[in-house]
Picture 1 (cartoon, rainbow, N blue to C red):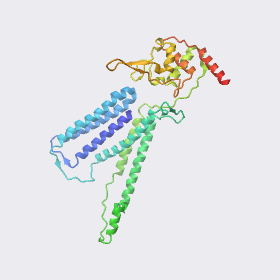
Picture 2: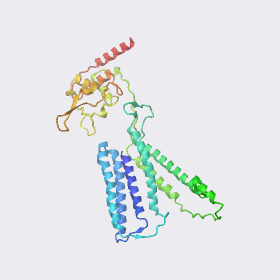
Picture 3: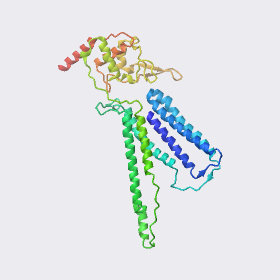
Picture 4: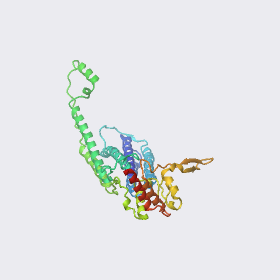
Length: 390
């Protein structure tokens, strides 16, 4: 989210700057403070760009709640504020501006760099969006349904991904430049009418009636290709360097762990095994927290072992819809609705009965007394094995 928001806001800001330059084309300010107005616009736009970059980098060091609600909103408001303030300055400074002849094809070097950066940022944003989608799905193709735990189901760190993003952007720009080069070389020898059937037929019919005229002289075009390459490559190198400075985290798929009853010798072993299931295969921590948390979507389980009986915990895991909540957020009598928790003993989670007992032992340890004995799990596993053998 930080990278996506940063690049998107920078793209909008650079586009606004390019339109601002286009609006000033062919005009010369006549007000006495025109020079100061241009400097003020440049400082505001550059300051906003630096703040957006800082907020994007700082977003990697704070929780997701802060990144989304505290940093992303000021980034958008900063861009909107630049639009309003800079537009007011531009309108006032351009009043009674003097019109000068506009030579199409001639443009200041700085505006060329802005247009090049705009193209680079647009292409780079597409790469960042693809990386964001890949990272958000983690190791799931369809969350909760189709899991991928192969060695290749991982999301690379941002530094490694930025190198591929920059390389993809460079290759795309190279292909675009190559396409323009081929077209320009072709148009020097053939007219554009050869590429369309109807104009070509009209041209072919009119050839006998038209006198021969010398071929038009094509003026030499200014060569800015090297500057464009340096600008694009410089931005991509800076982006790659910056991406490698933030904390690097590789999202690896979880390892499949078999339920090993030989590890269970004491209640502490059973609780530890249940804790691993709680944060792993059971996926309980995706919604529940142990202690106050702003990102938790379900009830806090801190001290739950002292509040609920063993039977109630088992029913909550296997038949969560049996628990009825009351909604008081509207007028009239409270509205009843069942808990929206999946059956933990059914697919896609599908914990076995011994695994359920281990999770229950861990929940009981949160402020209460563990009443589940290791012998219960071993006896259940032995009974199940005997039935399958017979």
